[in-house]
Image (cartoon, rainbow over all chains, first blue to last red; front, side, top):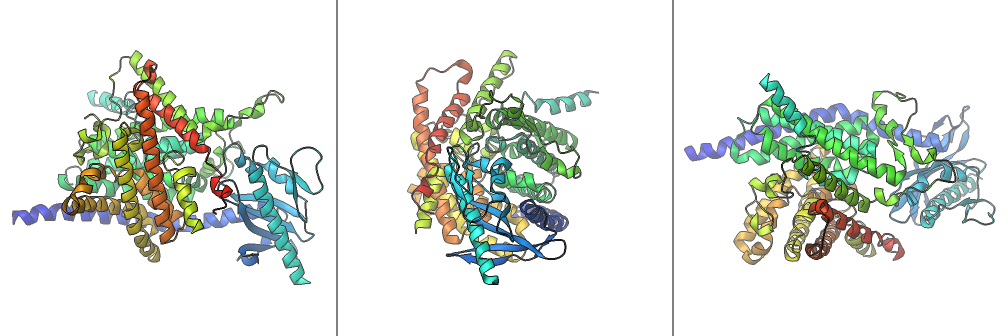
Length: 191
Length: 253
Length: 196
């Protein structure tokens, strides 16, 4: 009898603690769940706003679009009067360490309206500088196929690469170029 | 009066004499990993402090109810519950900090500071003293993280408090009027500007700064003739109660 | 296949758990005085990592199916703790020789953030079961490599003349910094080998 009691009491008290902990967590989950979901929506909207500041609203669900073997996604941006202003693409390319995911806004005339980096894990102080506004704003207004320049005479339609981070600069440019290619696909599809 | 004094002592001992990071060398993983910027360090410090106070209070309140045999699993459950709660709250209200801390937020569960305090303080002391102990230890942990982060951010990125805006969004959209840390490099006249020493925010810089700060703490405490702690001995390992192989591992008891 | 080789190399060299991700620093500093204990600890971590990934991965699918992902941290830490106890009992009973070499390190696994960290990272990265296992293996081997290498560095330190306040932990951390710096040289290797 004493033996069962010795086993039972610890087991029951541990069980009670487990249940109490689970209830506490379930309760917090209930309060925070909506807010967490809302945060993701807000973040997405803010990212879209930075790459296409003039757009009034965006299509709700992202559409799939394939380029080569990879499937990327895009959303349509609408202006004040409900006309199509351009498209927001989510594309990626291989950086120095891992994928760099880029959001690019392309206006209907084929020029880049803004570039924003959604995910990047490059070396701090070098590749991470790709997140700087000064680097990203170089893409603004470019179209077609964007080239890279490393000092000297700057070729047409190009951006200056980051010092010490050629691979990162190339990855971002590749991702933007993919977005521009995809834009071409959409345009051709409509004609 | 005597009680008040001892509560004050309970609080202050966590900051220098028994600083969990520099003196007891607990919680090294988060210290090294998140001290790349002042904002991350502050976020981690506050999260850990919240868990520490809650778990200390809960464990102290239940110390007479929990059978000694299942003490350790019970502590694990209590701590893990509070960590999950704090994690969900951070995800909801300061998503930017949650993203920056990443896996180290759930890993507060295995932070030796929390387990160590539960085992060596909360399990033996009344609720109020345990809460104060949690607050003091949390403050010491945060202060240590901040001092590491300050050195690393200034040298490694040339800024102080970059990204404060994302933390402060908690209190409204524009509390700081767009203030987002100080760009120290930008303050140096052009021409004299140097690139920040990026190595300090890389892992290697973390080990280096931590080593030097511990050496500095050792020097200060030696001058003040504070009692020396044998670093990395079993007394501070939260698993020491379960561990039966101290001498085999080559660590002193 | 290429993808799996990439994952392993990433775990060992570029994303080394100890030297790049700061997971498992306590055993790295605490049990690296001698090469044989360091190797034992590394092997035990690899072993527990593989087993805990194999058990937590299916459980997580269940948790997510029933919308209880918020229980992850609690469930995982309890599973790892129970698993470690079971491994210890099983090894003691059926594989005495393995128990003699690894048993010493097992109780330290529960609070080792490399184990819980790897389990959580596998889930956050959305790896399939196979990829998660390969990643766990890479992480474990990386931990083992870092431990053994660092134990070698520390045996050299024993005979070095060190300034008074740097003695002990500070000089250990400064040497860890140099080892970590050397691993930085591997970054970009996976992209360079076109493995991903």
